[in-house]
Amino acid sequence: MKERLKWVIDNLEEILCAFFLVATVILMSSQVFYRYFFGKSIASAEELARIAFLVMVYLATAHAAKHGRHVRVTAQFRLFPSAWRKYFIMFADMIWLFFNGVVIWQGILLYQSMNQFPLKSAVLDLNLKYAFAVIPIAFLLQSIRILERYYKLYRAGRLEQLATDGEEF
Amino acid sequence: MSLDLGIWLLLFLSLFLGVPIFVSLGMATFIALTATNIPLSIIPLDLFKVSEMFPLIAVPAFILAGALMERGGIAQQIVDVCSLFVGRIRGGLGLVTILGCMFFAAMIGSGPSTVAAMGALMIPSMIRRGYDKDYAAAVTATGGTLGILIPPSNPMIVYGVIANVSISGMFMAGFIPGAMVGTVLMVTAYLLARRRGYKGDGKRYTVSEAMQVIRKSIWALMAPIIILGGIYTGIFTPIEASMIAILYSFFVGTVITKKLKPLELWESLKLTSMTTGVVLVVVSVSMLFGRFITMYQVPQRLTEVMLSISTEPTVVLLLIFVFLFFLGMFMETLATIAIVTPIVLPLLGQLGIHPIHFGIFLIMTNEIAMLTPPLGVNLFVAMGITKLSLEKVALAALPYVGALIVCVLLVIQFPQIVLWLPQMLGIK
Image: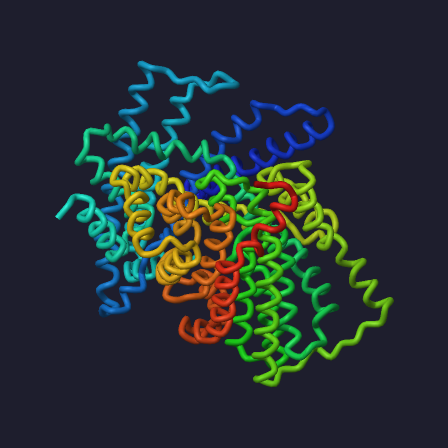
């Protein structure tokens, strides 16, 4: 039980992304069949798919952060001794965390302001503030994943591995 | 020193330090915003806009479709059919690889996925038949670039969204250049194979054997017909086509070939989520960066500078080509498109360059970018399969880069290569 929970937490982004992706595929392809056979389209399907897409993009961003896979320009590192590389990456990651902080902070402020001035979606009349909340939450998750990765690598004595960040696709 | 120059310097410094590209763009915009009285809440608002760029959903969808086709045996069927046609020619396996890539490219829209799918099958079989590893790696990496030129194409979707150009129009426009580039690459692969003395697979097919191969591979052969046919006849949009591609490859992989098991499905979904995160966050932050660009009127100033050099569209496109060639050494495809498109678009109008023509030109320059180190995504995938060094693969890919440059020059000089088909079919 405990192991299963750990697996879910470790793979949270993947699981949620897979869910939203599959949901989008089902929504949008049923749209095609519905339109082809009945000549009408379902407006709510697209609206739901849009929100699913938003969630997917930012969760997937956290997923890639968890594995250190975000694209960086790394060719210039060849000019320096390879031992320096991980320090470059560490410094770069501090800037990354700072930027995430800005997004989280502004995202929360925006969410709060939407309590005063609610914004509704066009078709389903959903309160969009929950969709907006996805951004600070996902960026927070992303920051946690970055720190978690440092912690794990440090514990395993493999901080050197940071040097390969952003190299593979 | 003006503020915007300082911000550009900061952006380059942060890229130089190895800050992820999307963060570098975001930070540059954040700093630019703090110098104005625009509220910072524009940052989450702009990040939210990714949901308005809905056609982008086709990007992860085509990636998933590609992963399913690779694991579900559709890629293998394509290879079988291509061997039937060009396997016997000298250096035949190289030709099979490129033809296979063209075929695969007609079902999905990403360069690296095409390399991954075709490379996994073709590189080992080329090495078994005595082809050098570097030739095998280079021909696959190059063939994979067709993934973005032959429709459907993820970069075309991104370009269409940003430039507000019809995606179906882009897809039609990619057809003839795709066939042209594919042919040029096959000729290059043939000439290189001749010089190295490679042989074909020596297999002769009787008519009944050939029919058997085709019958066995019918599911793979149907895929591009369904996907592209559906788009062109208007039964579904390019975005919906990506969903149909998933359903189709899922159906074939589970019911027909029975190669897709839960593990393969999970792996494909994970790969899709990873690629989505890496790629689309750059596109979404580039919307934010677009604010900085418009705030400082970068496009207008670029237009002025360009027009002061020349008002001849060909010359301007050549200049842009040189710039993109160097940019492409360091930048990834979708990031390049997301950043360059809004900057250059106003210039196009002034010069009378058709946005579809420019779009295909931009896609083709990005094909080259996939093959030029230090950052060439297709090289990386081919390196991963062959375990060769970057230098080796990049060197072996050099003749193909030359061939691609010739193709780009042709497209610059003769816009009709691009525009003829969409205009025939009534897209303005």
